[in-house]
Image (tube, rainbow, N blue to C red):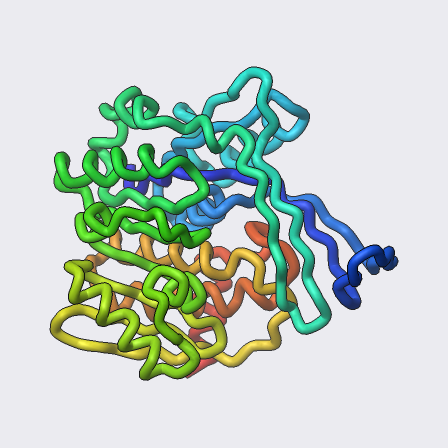
Amino acid sequence: MDIAVIGSNMVDLITYIDQMPKEGETLEAPSFEIGCGGKGANQAVAAAKMGSKVMMLTKVGDDLFADNTISNLERYGIDTEFTSKVPGTSSGVAPIFVDPQSRNRILIIKGANENLLPEDIDKAADKLKKCSLIILQLEIPLPTIYRAIDFGKENQIPVVLNPAPASKELDFEYVCKCDFFIPNETELEILTQMPVETDQQVQEAALSLIEQGVKNVIVTMGSRGVMWVTEEHVERIDAYKVDAVDTTGAGDSFIGCFAHFYVKNGDVLHAIKMATGFSALSVTKRGTQTSYPDKDQLEEFLALQV
């Protein structure tokens, strides 16, 4: 097994809107779609579409969405041995609103994701020990994330932590145990309480985390590109220019693709560059997982950028 994703799954309820309604206002929207999402599941699918062998440790409810979520993961070749149902609980859902400029607003209802507990990691320990990388996000309980980080340290397995959605309750003692910390600029601003409007400000905010002991900070900045900051150096990678249709799940696509290439060859900069292309291509189509390219599509896209 290459990658273990310990995290969330969601059912995306995507409404494409002309404008956000005001308080008390009812508006007609042009279209609506239901898709499979959740930060954890998105990252797992992105890595799997690149060719990684991925296992998903997650919880679904016992509602009409559950079987579809599990079968969707399996459709991408993801190992679901430790994806289980929680009786009497709804699956996680994410109402998403996308405007004509491809900007999105998202609400999440965690549902069964709240029931992914530290003991679930111990139950999956034998299989987790065979993985080369662990990916985490913040749509599951913090104690579970902390146990997963400790598990990675105990078994010399690199850990990627995506602090999304950002939580000020996140214990940075555990963040410092991770090998890669990958926020977007908004999450970086929330966690550091520092401005991030310019590249210089992003760099200063990221360096403040390095000073606390974080090893690698990789900040995804949308159309502004990516910034990789360590104690030794700062590297900025430009974004590819594309016509964005829907940016939902772009950050997740970056992380899944980054994980694939990092596991494949251990080259951080190469992994960032490949993931930058992958996420750029993902925003040119509607949806989350359904917008993610496969390996051939990514190679074709990158070849055209030279």
